[in-house]
Length: 343
Length: 248
Image 1: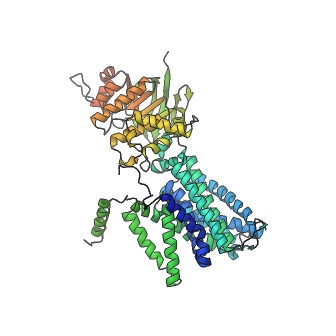
Image 2: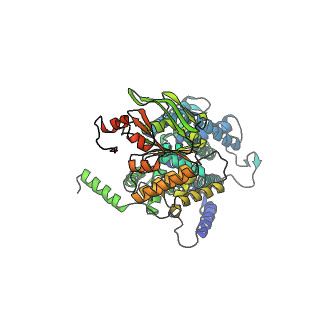
Image 3: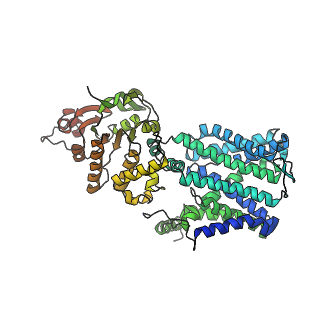
């Protein structure tokens, strides 16, 4: 492709009207559709935010972090401990989640970011598993019993609120956090020189170093940032769900989902995790609503991932941008056909 | 007294039993264009990598602009003013040409606007400003070489080390690259250039250093070096050439 970078604003009419319409819909969502759909919206926003947090290190920086879900759990437990064990209001747990996640992430970043590729992925996966096992045997996390958080229905940050702390309230809390994550990602990774440096080290670390970029420092910054964002979503999730257990908030499936969502939507893009997050989350919810408690959606997602990796490595966003090379697709199909003796 | 901007003293780099650079002592004068030639595997690129901090030396020292910089990290050396390019051109392909330029990090305290202006000036100088907002992946090989040079210029370097700047480039673009190097050199930038094309080297370099089997075997202007017995030995494997041309 030799032309200018394609714009996403391909919808008919003025993009600002589309953005305004979307903003109104997001704000009015729980008021228009009630508690059930507020809960669905809340979940979608959380997963979009989590996928975006993984996209920072996995997509923009190109480091396959298979332990990222651990920071969601760290955030949830930091909030749980602050509220359930120490009796502090949520806001203290929220700040604690960021501080603990940043500290752990920095300590992890120093040795693990020297690794690349599969070695980094294995190291981070092992780290997440050790954190989960530690949480299962530690008293302050409630061990195998988990932690039950107090839910206040009349106060926020210790101040009485004139509205009920309901599904809609948590929807708005998640909406604010999700929008803040999107805005931060847009500014830092798409507009600021910091983002160019992150992409530079992903494309060619030696070339980046030769151009004055302290790649070790930049990698650590991205890793810590992405982990803190995941932890903040964990904090709000714990506040909302009022119960945290290692098998839930430290489950490997949390990382898996983040990876799948970002990969499907488009790695290293602003809107990829939004598209991938929405698609995977809705597929999961809809199959649960219409087919009952089932894992039917899992093979579907697996097939989608295979198709994406083989034919559109830049994800759904890549397809929408027209980045899929038809000759490559034909070549891949031919290769597969020959491999499985179909042609 | 000479004004050396880059000096290595007994610089040594080993990979196991192989000594890729064996006590290389070499001085580059401020403002000159120094060519480095030698057969494949003679240690030229290893020398670049060791001087610019990508390899830690096993012995010896590197001085840059009067300061010992042995073992400095590459990004620190780059910000200090020692720029380099690579044998295999490596643009950041998922970014535009302009973003490639803006990714460069310096310590000079330039504002974002000043940096954008500087990037625009360099792209204009290199005659690739018309593709500033195109993705780097769509550039031709020659344009990628120009972009690589442009990125290095964003460092406002005192010394630029170019690893085969004319390799794989068509003659017209090669001539443009050489003109740019001459222009920059006239403005005071020092160059150290590895190049296999002897015609390019003959017209470009003020002086030439010859490497063979990890050693620095000769130095001087192109004509003198091409008559040197050790150089002939390195390139011809010990046979004696009847004519005066070095067939390299």
